[in-house]
Image 1 (cartoon, rainbow, N blue to C red):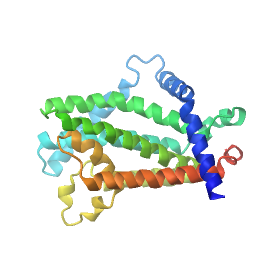
Image 2 (cartoon, rainbow, N blue to C red; image 1 turned 180 degrees about the vertical axis):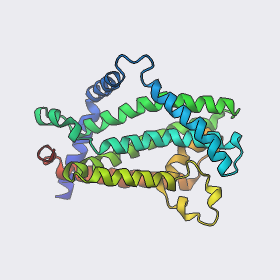
Image 3 (cartoon, rainbow, N blue to C red; image 1 turned 30 degrees about the vertical axis):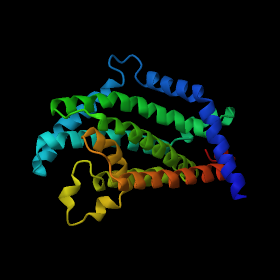
Amino acid sequence: MINDKRKSGVVDLLQALTRREIWLYLGWQDIRQRYRRSVLGPFWLTISTGVQIGALGFLWAELFHQDLHDFLPFFSIGLVIWSFFSGVILEACTGFTQFEAIIRQTALPFSSYLLRILFRHLVILAHNFVIIVLVLALTRQHVTWTTLLCLPGLLMASFLALFLSGPIAIFCARFRDMPQILSNLVNVLYYFTPIMWRPSTLARMPWVYELNPLHHLFEVVRAPLLGSVPTIQDYAWTGASICLAGTAYILLLGRFRHRIAYWI
C-alpha cells in the first residue's frame, strides 16, 4: 500500500515536470496579469525590497553594533532569500484552493499548481537578485569561483520550497485554519533565523541557529556570495531537509491526491 502511494506521488510529480510548458506559461501569465499596465512591473517589488534593505540595514547595523560594510551584504542576501522562500511557503497555503475552478474542470497533475507558484517566485527572485548584485558592488565584495557555489545552493532552496509546499497545500486544503497558523509560524521563524542578526551575536545560545534548518539552507546560498565555502554541516542539514520534505510530499500527495478536489 505504501509503495502504491509513493508511486502515485512520484507519477504526479513526473507528469507535471514533463508537461512543464503548462506551468511555465501559466506562471509567466500570472506575473504579467499581476503587473498589467504597470510601468516597472515586478521591479516595484525590487524597489520595495531595496528600500527595506537600505533602511533596516543601517538600523540593524547600529543596533547590533555591526560594521555596515560587512553587515549590509549579509542582511540583503538573507532578506532576498527569505522573501523568496517565505513567499512560496505562504502562497502554498492556497496552493490548491486558489485554482479551485481549474482543478474541478481539468485533470492536471497537482504538482503543476505548486510548480506554477514556485516559478512565479523564481521570477521575482531573479528581479530581487539585482539588489544583491548592487550591494556586493557597493561594498566591494570580490567575485571568485567560490561565488558560483550559490547556484547549487539556490537549486537546493528551490527543491526544498517545492517539497514543503506540497504537504502545506494539502493540509491547508483540508483544514482551513492552517493558513493562519502557518503565517504566524513563518513570522516567528524569521526572527529565529540569522537574517537581521549574525550567529556570532548568540554565542551563548548557538543551538538557536545550529538546530535551525533554515539557517543552513541560507548559508549554502549566502556563504558563496560572501566569499566563503559552506560547511559540510550546512550541506548535510539542507540535504536531509530536502529528503524528508520530498518523502512527505510524495507520500501525502499519493495518499490524498484523489480527495483534494472534494476538499476545495
